[in-house]
Image (tube, rainbow, N blue to C red; front, side):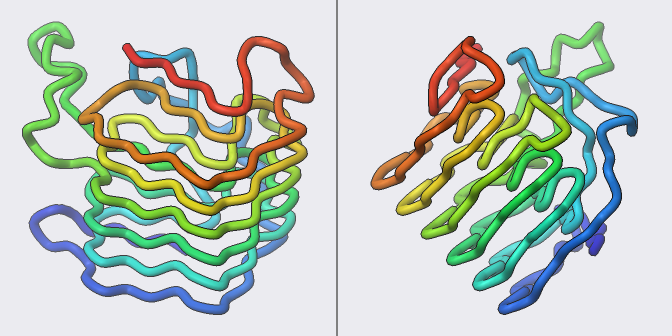
Length: 201
């Protein structure tokens, strides 16, 4: 599923409720980008790929045997809710939020300038069950964010992971709130961090 809107003309109040997504193609050899100051490279692709939404609701869905990323919030989003979903056996990350800034003009000096507002903000990720992530792509997580601000992660259960459960690739915007989550059996294929990885650069 692909939604391509933007900040000027967003899709409002889209609801994906009680749907199943499965058996998508692998994407680990597709073109990757560097999301921000952390050490990740990531493809801007997912089985459910969304750009430009307000008041998005994704709840009670199942993502199974997705051979790339399952869900991505790309560029502009406000007040998205991702709740009560199951993510299992994903080739890449279960969920990712990746904003956009001008990284090229003025020799890259504007790369951290978020005043354009083209990024996810006020996202709530609540009561999701995530397991067996990173089957193919080892830079993967239950939740990954870059150039994203004021996310709330509450009540999620995340286990059997190639690497970290939650990965904050930068400190962009701040205001993230992480509480009441259970992450275990993480970093099974690396030993460079723990269940939550923060690259606050």
